[in-house]
Length: 446
Ligand SMILES: *Cc1c(COP(=O)(O)O)cnc(C)c1O
Image (cartoon, rainbow, N blue to C red; front, top):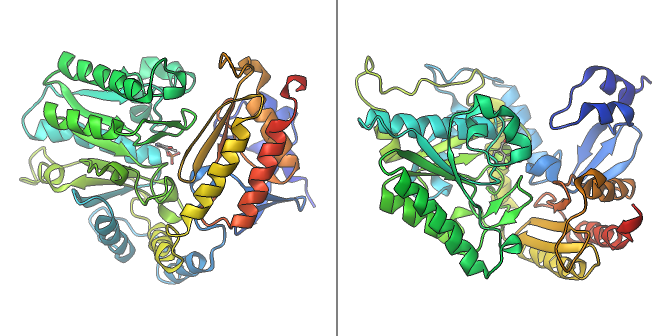
């Protein structure tokens, strides 16, 4: 058999990957998946500990989703939504509107989280134009936020390592510090008030010129699973209302049960003007994303077809039928298997292990929201001083975990524990036990 690792290095350029190091190493090549397991070309089995980058929900090759895709395939794989309707896209849109916060009434499809946020940004901008307010071109976002990698979503992204390089290409946005109690001197409440104060400062500075606030509700994923203090989202919503700007919530990572409830924003009873969905939308099977909007936003785009109020944006595969069928099937699995109802015991188990892990020598902080958990490795627990980044401790620990059959991908020195929601208690415990064991080793020697 041909050596796939060799061919990978010869032909494939990987995302978010320093390719020099990649070429010098032996890549693992995944051949198939089943349930929460991934299998590589050499026959090794791994627990999919990051849900194939936070998107898998019910496991791989779920019979119901597989079946739905096959059935759809026997009808049609794709037809355009430009000027035509399609059955699968209608069915999914109706379902999404019925299960998302009440303010949301329309679904605009695209194919990735980045396009979902890109679309929300363009819609928010044009919304104000259509209403005759030309000066509202500014977006407010949080430092360390991540909304995807297209130029618009990078413009509102606040992670320096990822976003700084493209500085000359992006539009200007304003950022306030994200509330991160672990790295804040003061209580969680003070941390929250501090960030809200900064946000209000920006709203005052740019009064009449802000189009929208965009943020990840409850958890800033790519930042290292930074978890906001309770009430922060409510505070932002209140500010958006008081200053009359739109609120865009990016639920690409936190949506579809990740935080323990279907949506993160409902935990604080917040309804946004626009909401972005991706990752888990199809159960993690196919690239479909969606931007949902309120009726008010939608109606600003009505008017004479010859006028300039139309939203001129779309993608070839907008509303892809196979993807929409997978998404509908995924929502059915949520119902059939009581996916959300079965989370609390898994969440408690993670909590129990995190408490134990937090006692370990090189662990600075542990944090959890539902089925999203993080373990922050530090060189010095007392001062919270991190390891030098060149040592890549997060990657090293994950390398050891991989050799023990757990696939995880860290964010710097933050270990990300995010298995499929459907993971069984036994496998979850096995995985957490291995994480505890690997983090418990003497990391000084690594
Ligand atoms: C992953 C992610 C995105 C981007 O989604 P892609 O499908 O990778 O483009 C956007 N926002 C958040 C919060 C994400 O976690």
